[in-house]
Length: 251
Ligand code: 13P
Image (cartoon, rainbow, N blue to C red; front, side):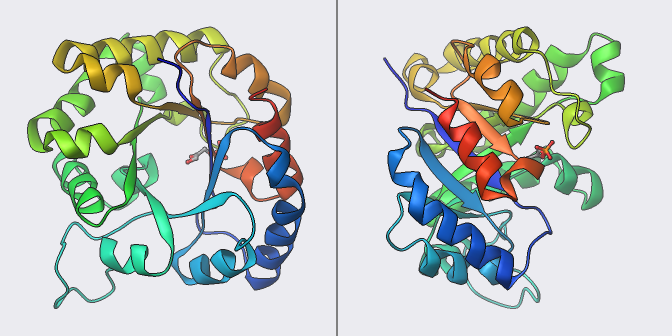
């Protein structure tokens, strides 16, 4: 099966209204010529503004987090999946390493959020990845297998079939040191194999994104990996020109 390439931006806690507007103008002008699917995950408060700016562009909207709770209620400060869908999101990042490390999100919480996303009709982009310490101790595969196992134990098949998986080695995030194309492909092949052990159909169709210091000058080499189906991009997604150049590198 041939999988489409997916290029996803994650602005993290960056940007302001003027940057959103400039980004939307640039993408509206140039995104039409790009064959990959594209989406951008901005802070909650800018989703509607970016959605309006991208109304005529083939670029989807996403959020960076959602509540694990599905139903509305007394959860001060939280935003549920239905609200995200209501303002135009189609995607939501779940289990980013920053949320796991800084906000205590466990594998169980990540799985609950992935299920909540699918219940709201959103595509969860579930992040997995190892620390430098774990890689150096040869634990990369064990760490990733455990993160995936939690998803398979807790999520139903509809959630698993809808999810995108992003491999984001923590040592590569925001460091300027991307995984090598070989390292990325090796891990992606391992992830697809782990998924195939449980469900061959999902393994064939699931999109595996690589994230961690993806830039215009390393993107094409990363995308050459047979199991690399696109990228989740932080810093280089903040400017339209670098984001578009990475998307063009999908060929
Ligand atoms: P950078 O592209 O800035 O390394 O960030 C990667 C990331 O965490 C995307 O979610």
